[in-house]
Image 1 (cartoon, rainbow, N blue to C red):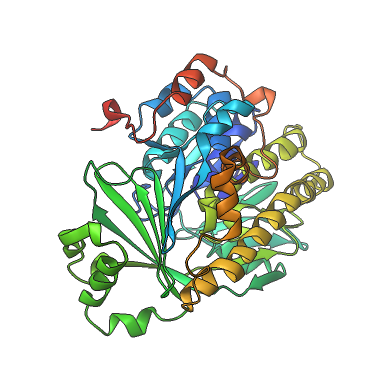
Image 2 (cartoon, helix red, strand yellow):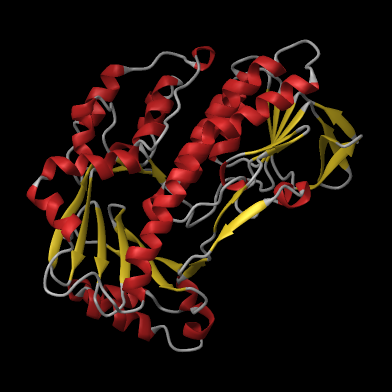
Length: 435
């Protein structure tokens, strides 16, 4: 069965839903195709950074966001063999005018449900679930739509790929891609957290080859345990007790909580990829977010970059798509402009991640550590001059080129809420939002 829309968005993740919402508020007919029946996926990126919260506020959705079960993190600490250090104080962002100076940890399915509900309030927004895209439709060298499900075809003036790092649309497009080597993969799992445990974000880097990131989720830690690239299968042939022993050696204060890892089934593998398309668009097609540039988990910035892409794409596509009969050439120019706008923050962020891979991750995983007996020079500087911690906080929390909601999409930012939220103390939890 063939149907038609103005813009078809493939993928109902943060980028796809935000793009659909912002375009719909411009009156553009947009259909978002999500292959799953709901948003319930575990071990997805749950970080909502200050730049994204500013956007949520500008879209008039802050009151709804406050009702979600989220926890603020306003500091990042690292524990080295040479001692502890604070490397990022997000609360300092409030002193440079950032209304929400913290990272909010919120289950992604709650965030997506909220954004999708806001989209469905717009008459030109349609979200279709259980709609897996199987191919692109082309006519005369132009992408004119997609095939999805069992024999469905949806034609459109433009197709936007928001279907993630394993994007089928990107694969079918034939757009040229550049891949970068990465030194690690990541094990994801949860460990119970007690009230006296360290709050916020905690990193453990040891000189004997262990690198562990722990994110405070209130009653538990979400843990990222970095392993050398390609070693997962070999490790899983042994007992999971070996991982428990490694955790006890790295952080003895965890005690018997590591016994919560009963089997390897409790440990999920994230295969890290770092790549970007050399060209994000083709006639009738645009790729954004992870479909255009898969990011490393370093800094946890992938989702927030994808959302910024979505806002930039909506700003540039909306004028061309709002015409009674959109001009294909104008649509293609707008799509190409999105890459020009977002190229600098993408390349800059990936370059910073590649440097972190080489200088920090590779050395630690090889057992080279970060120096013997003393903190590395940059970390020492951040301890001596705490005000400088605003720099890493800004680069992670705001990024190289934050996007603002276009005028047509705004429903009234709420500065009073912003001021209240920025005053949340480190380690506090939005308890009233928990079910």
